[in-house]
Length: 194
Length: 194
Image (cartoon, rainbow over all chains, first blue to last red):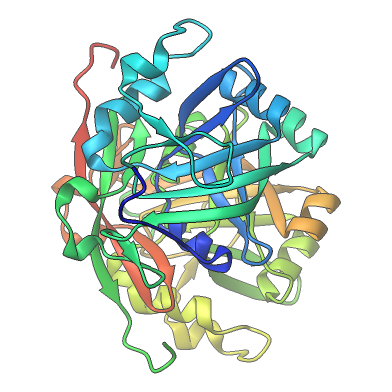
């Protein structure tokens, strides 16, 4: 399961989210394990690395994160499109078999108890920074990044390599309903500053 | 200047950001007008529509927004790549001629005093919801959406139409340095729920 997975420096973990992909949010507490799809996730700080994610009060994943204090954001791929859509449409509250029916296969990174979804392109493990005002008023959750990993076949040396990989690796960018865009072509400004 | 620009329902304005594009943040106060590039902008709420954007303390745009209480997020296009990069690299504090040198041409929507950048694909006009803790601790600014517009050639009927338009219209998704990805292909789950 961990073949091809390499750690990403925490200070560069923002690059896993910088292009604005739709993510999967995973968490577990003593009773439940859940994964949900979220389009509203964003980097918040370079160092110490932090992220934000908006979690509606109706979601089971939110309850689990409030209980456990930990979650992972992961960047799914075009190959996982059906799973990504199912994980966003079905609630664990209505369908206890949600994860099995969605086809989500879970694993854990060494020294981590946060469930991670297999087959994604990258993973950001987070400890919740509890902020009751943001959570209650804005459904906004802030995580301190405590681990980051990527599949070296698509992210290595601090950069995505979408242009060198098969389309099935591309990130998904949700618009509405069942409609997504994949990430597209690399374009660069030529500069001496890199 | 306003040819092809149509209002977007505020409740659907999240769709302008949902695919995670790099944005331009614009604002003016009694003394200054500035535009900066930001990769860390995100939808926060459907209704009343709200957005977040992370603005470093070093930026002039942030000072202006704190003074004026208003800002716009806009979605630039591949055609504007050089301008987008320049607006993110140069500070108005160092270069008073930043906007002219970057090639940013400004205009205003009817009944709005917020400067907007011409040639973008979409615009979200915001009133700052003052939250000193988020602003000071996290550099996180929350805006209530008070107006939204899009160029009908690329966004209409509540949806992006990247697949029907020339590449120069594509949104930019910043990775690091001068490196970006454009948005890619449309992919859909076939469902009866739309």
